[in-house]
Length: 332
Image 1 (cartoon, rainbow, N blue to C red):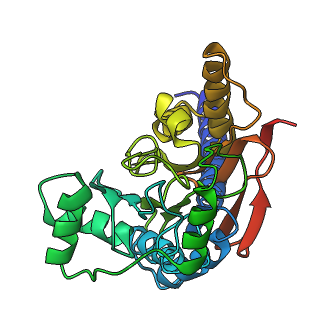
Image 2: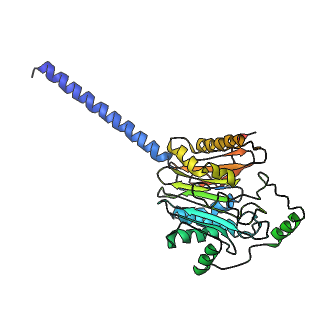
């Protein structure tokens, strides 16, 4: 090889090595940024009681516990509070004066459990988990759900507190059934979380609409409507008018929008827009309707969106102190 060619070859090799070094450095920087962008652990939940629920869930997450255990613990806190009138013990009754509870739970492996129209048991979310882990089924309802819960050692008790009973008796004077948006008489504790291992889980629990027809079921215990978790994509949960959330299989819709690359907030917005369009198609008034979604993706990014102002949610993560956030809305 001639000296001139040899020099050019060495020079080209040196340049190539330098370029590779630069590219490796850039790749390392991009990888570091990507890793840093993943926020974990994180937990978000619906409504003002989500702040207290998040604090309970954080005890599990901050100790490197599993997201499934965290969401169950957080939801149980709200279920046990007699002052919270739309969930668990203290929940408002149906028009027959019976407190009937719905709940579901889902983990990172697509395991699911649900209970519907469950009476006399304070913690339907834990019964739902028992259905998931101890039966070949995914949903139990009514007397069958109660029999199962009692067989599992859950305690039977009266869930109708004095304040709820007095409201029901006052309602009986007119028996007028007109649910209103944002007064939290038909809302839900929905919670989703990502743990230190990057795994997602979620849970949802409600006593349903106040003074509903006996046997009515909304979205809350229905996987894909009130709650959905896909550990490769993200998780979502819902609140508000369950019938309308079910029409679009709301939380599954949100997760699928995230799968397409949309942010959690945008995914929630698109699901709300779909509900609004369907409501108009059915010639129904949006004025008294409220639906809302919250979501987390695999990067630990969170977001929410609702139909009209008034919905808020709580966020607690490794870099966000436990706080309440007002969700953006489609309507002013």
